[in-house]
Length: 449
Image (cartoon, rainbow, N blue to C red; front, side):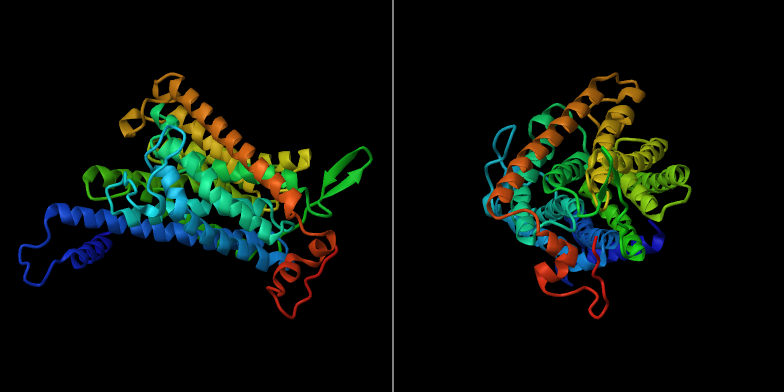
C-alpha cells in the first residue's frame, strides 16, 4: 500500500472512531483496531457486491443480443433473493450453532453467532455477497433457454439451503472444518458449488437449439458466438478487480502485522494466478485453434482466479503462478470436453468454476503450508498425502451434494411449473418473451439459432 493510501485510510479510520472533539487522547488502541478491521471487511463486501456487475457483463457479452435483458435480470435478482434468504435463514444454517451438518440458530440474525472479529452486520454483508456470487454462477451455464420464474425458484433454494449447508461444513465449524479442510476464500464453497450445479442444471435443461448438429451417428458442436466481446472483457476486468475484495477481504482484518502481511500475500497471489491463467489459456487455444482466442483468454484469467481462491493465503507466489497456469489449461480443455459429451455451457461456467474449483481445492493439498495457516503441510511442502486426501474428499463430497440436491430441485421445477422456454420463444429471444422488451431497441436481433 502506498504512503498516500496509508494516510487516506488512517484518516478515514480516525474520523470514524473519534468519540468527540474533546477526546484529546484519541481512540483506544482496541477501538482503532476494531474500526480498521470493520472498514476493511465492509470495503471488501462492497467489492464482492460489485462482482455482480462483472458476472452480468461477462454473461451478457458471451450470449446473443436477444437474451441480454434476461441474463441481466437473473444477475440482478439472484443477488436480491440471496440477500433476503441469507438474512432470513441462510446465515443461521451456515454459522449457527447446530451439528456437523447444519447450523440451527440465529434466524433473521436474532441472537446469531458471530465467529469474526468485526460487527455482525459487517460480517453478514460480506458473507451475503459471497452467497450471491455462488448463486449467479449458474445463470451463465443455463443461459438462453431457462424460464425466468424457474430461475428465481432455483435461487431461493440454493441461497437459503444448499450453499449455507456447504458453507457450514467448511466455514461454520462443520465436519470438514474439523478434519482440517482448507478453503480460504471459496474455491469449493462458492465456485465448485455453483459450477457443478450449473453442470447438472444444463444437462437437465438440454442444449440450446442449434448448438449440436447431427453428423451421421455422431454430432458436432456448433459455435454460437457471443454478441459483445467488449462487454465481456469489461466484465472480466470488473471481476478481477472485485476478487481483490473476495480473497484479501477473507482475512477479515488488517489491524495486526500478521494480518497485513497475509492480506498482501493473498492479493499478490490472486493477481499472479489470474495473469498466469490468462497466458496459458491463450497459448493453449492458439495451439489448438490457430488463433489467440479472446474469449478463452478471458476465461483463463477467471480460471486462475477461481483456482487460487482456496489456497491464496496458504501458498507461496511461485506456487500461485503454477496453480493459475494449470487453471488456464483446464478451462480450454474443459470447454472441448463439454462439447464432446454434448453439454451446452454458453459462458464456460463449468470449466471456470466447477473444474477449477476442484483444481484449486486440490492445490491446497499440494502446495499448502502449515506455516501460513493451514492445518498441516501439503504434499510438496513435505507433509505427505494427508492434506491432499482431505481436500479431495471434501471437493468430491461438496460437488456430489450440490449436484444431487439441485437435481431434485430442477426435476421438481421441470415437472411442475416448467424449466425451459418453448422453442419459439428461444428462437425469438427471452428478452421479448420473458420481459417484453429488448436490450437494443430499434436493432434487429432476431435469429433462427
